Amino acid sequence: MTSTQDWDPRRYADHGRFVPELGQPVVELLAPRRGERILDLGCGDGALTEKLVAPGCVVVGVDGSAAQVEVARRRGLDARVVDAHALPFAAEFDAVFSNAALHWMPRQDAVHAGVWRALRPGGRFVAEMGGDGNIATIVAALERALRRRSVDPRTAVPWTFPKPGEYRALLEGQGFVVRSMEYFPRPTRLPGDLMGWLETFAGSFAAAVPEGERAAMLREVCDELRPKLCSSDGVWIADYVRLRFWVEKPGTRSGG
Image 1 (tube, rainbow, N blue to C red):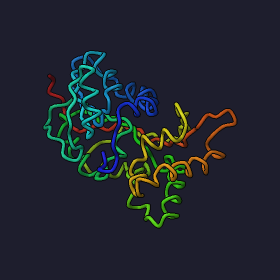
Image 2 (image 1 turned 45 degrees about the horizontal axis):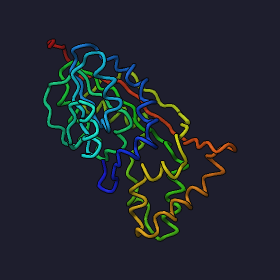
Image 3 (image 1 turned 60 degrees about the horizontal axis):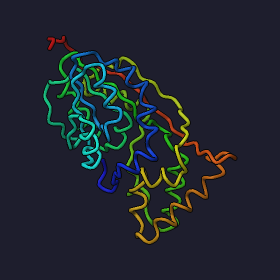
Image 4 (image 1 turned 45 degrees about the vertical axis):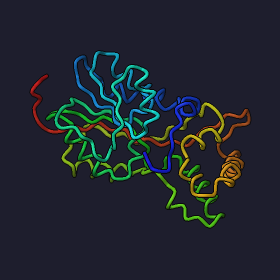
């Protein structure tokens, strides 16, 4: 969802397929019910959106990547290219769902305001995102690689990984009632090597250096992290930390 992060659907399917696979607990927390209208915020290629449609919900998926939205549409989903900071909906959804997308959205206040507008009174906002410390080992190595090239890493970091207390305050400041919030480490086995993950998710770091230097920089990061994140049998484990929540917009449902 950032200007320097390009989403290649084929690469995402190869190296990011764990994202929707590990999103099932968030779907279970949402507990979608037949007939509900649900907004999937940051739907990506629609793999998880299908899980919301399955019980008989009417689902609209939105994402900032036209390429990912096109793949979602090929699945037969109602998917639209929308800026998450300017959601164009008003009191039309029973729930807003989001998995592994909110941390790509820098202006959280604008996102929360849009979710609030989109929800009907009594509606719920259920999501999981990266929390404080998420992929900290990987981020630190990427930042060191940029500093060695005299690049300020603050210009390249595309993510917001909040502390639970800070995020609770943001949500409550919008008016939401926090029903549950979990913060937990989730070491995550990557489907391939770290290079594939970096090429898929760390595009803004690569874009911060000249094109001819990008592959070498990413290899350098992989070499540095191999002793920390790669097992003796070649399995890469990323140091994910998640923030999962269920909040509610106060009010009484009118049905429909």
